[in-house]
Picture 1 (tube, rainbow, N blue to C red):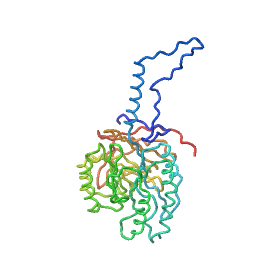
Picture 2: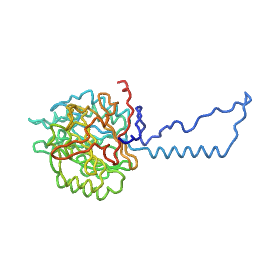
Picture 3: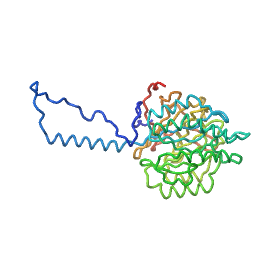
Picture 4: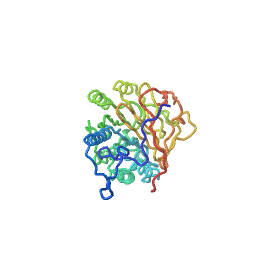
Length: 374
């Protein structure tokens, strides 16, 4: 495994827009005391110049701080439930402590897609519960939340039009404070910029190819804006290729989409739905599956153990991408990539663990510490 990159300290960090204290740049020295015969300080121009240079270096370091993003996925419980497991509250509390620049959800925030179909009141009650456990604590902490629909949030399959419409209503009223590049189809698919990276949310709640109009939008977006950024990160719910046992047939599997992502030099593709963490790589694209935070952890293909519930942390700085998953219930201990299968082989595709590929994705070192009291 390659050497790990920067660490995220357990105490978290300030938002990028805030000034960050930096320790160890200079040592405070006591002033000379005339009453005790000490010599008065002497003005030295070179010392003043050195002090100014240190301050300018501090500004430069703050400006060069990497972008930090937290990713959550699959937080829901049983069909129609307004109950959230304690791990959801623990994940949100940990994210608030880490103070990322923003949070991404790769879907399945509520538990729709039930038959018989849920009523409007039932669906809205689920969303109110989600907002109480997740949206509002993040908003109170000043952390934007960028979402993408899961099949249980707003499925595009026939019969779930009401749930899909309510998803749009809920998130149109909660637009995140990000720099949108294209919000014409928000909150289903859209793009925004952060730091040197372009983030693209796709609408993937069904299996198989994306709708032709969304593919055309994505192609135009990447052609017009992709080259302006050092990093291009795409996120949606259903994965491009399989990761988990029992869901080997639940994926997009569209070679045209994969070719488009490769040609546009997309660096990272984040997905949910399979409830298992894996940092994979296939044909020049890093494909990272998120574990669930809520119910139903699954086993990776080729693994005998269930993937622990986890949140994902991403650090984007310059040309570097670093990533880690922190496992529950307190989300303080990183998952060691070496404990994961070297390869995930399914009839659809073979994925290679990212650290075995000489490319841009590195394992992010996160200090494992005790959780803060709740």
